[in-house]
Amino acid sequence: MADKNLKQTRRRLSVMSDNKLIEGMDSVNLDEKAEAEAAAQAQSSSGGFIVNSYGGYSKKGYAPYNPKKKNQDALIMAEDPKTRSLLLVVLDGHGEDGDKVAQAIKGKFASYLFKHKDFATDIKAAIADVVAKVEGEVLRDMAIETDFSGTTFTCAVIRGNTCTCGNVGDSRSTIGYRNESGGITGIALTADHKPDLPAEKARIEAKGGRVFAVEYDDGVDGPPRVWLGHMDVPGLAMSRSLCDAVAHSAGVSSEPEFVEYEFSQGREDLILILASDGLWEFMSDQEVMDIAVGTTEPRFAVDKLISEANERWMREEQVIDDTTVCVAFLGNFMAGGGDAK
Image 1 (cartoon, rainbow, N blue to C red):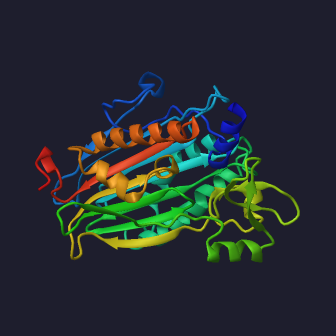
Image 2 (image 1 turned 45 degrees about the vertical axis):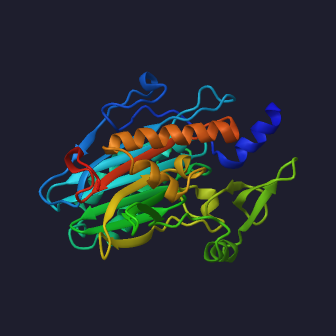
C-alpha cells in the first residue's frame, strides 16, 4: 500500500523543499506555524485604489518519504508608490534546487521591475524584460543547479483599474465577480501551461522534444510530461517554466503569457487570487472563490484555502504539496470588515 501511495504521489509532486522566507499574514491558524516562521504581512490599501486589502502565505508541504524537504514555493507582495502599483507574484519551484531558483527570483524581481525604464508606461514589456533578466542571472549562478531545476511564475500588477497578469507554468491567477443571483463566480485569468495543449505541444515537438504521460504499474497514467527526443528526461509536467535548461532544449519556454484585465467592466469584481498548484490540484476556481467569499479579511481567506487544500491532498494522496496563496479584496468588498451585500 505504501508503494502504491508513493507512485500516486510522484505523479503530481515535484521535488519539494523547505524555505523559511515566508511572507503572509500576521495571524494564521495553520499547522507547523512555529516551523513556518511566518514573517507576515497583511496590507490595507486606501486612496481609491481598487484593492482595499490583501494578504498571502506560503506553507511547506508534507511528504513522509522526505522528512528534510524544503518549501520550494515563494511569494512576493510589493507596492511601488511612484507608479501607484501593487505587485503580487507566486513562484512554485521544482527539482533539486527549486527552492534556490524561486528564492533567487524573489530576491530580485520587485526591485528590478520597479526600476525598469518601461514600467511606468509599458507593464508587459517591463515584466518580460525582467523575467528574462532574472532567469539569466539564475542560470549563470554556479551555486544553483538549473539543468533540472526551475520554477513557475505567475504575477499580477494592479494599477488604476487594470490588472496585468503574466504567467509561466501552472500556477494561476483567478478573479471572482458577483453573479446575477448575488453569489460569486470564479474564472481563471491565466491559462495553465500544460504540455498537451495543442500550441504548446506543437512548439515542443518542433524543437525535437516529446510529450507523453508515464503509465504506472496500476495502469493509471500520470500527467503529460516533456521529454528530450532521444532520452526519457527530464519529464517536466509543464510546457513553460523559468530555468530548467534541459527541458528548454526540448522546447519548454520561459516566455510569459499576458492577460490585461479591466476590473468591474459591466460586473462587480470582488476577489483576486493567485496561487501555486498546491491549491489548484484538487480545487476548482469556483470552489476556491466560494470559500474566499465567506470570509471577512484576505488573511482569513488564505488560512481557510490552505487548510482545505491540505486536507484534500492528504485525503487523495497522503502527502501535501507546498501551497502558496495570495488574496486581494477588491472595491468595496468587505472594506472595513463590513457586510458583502
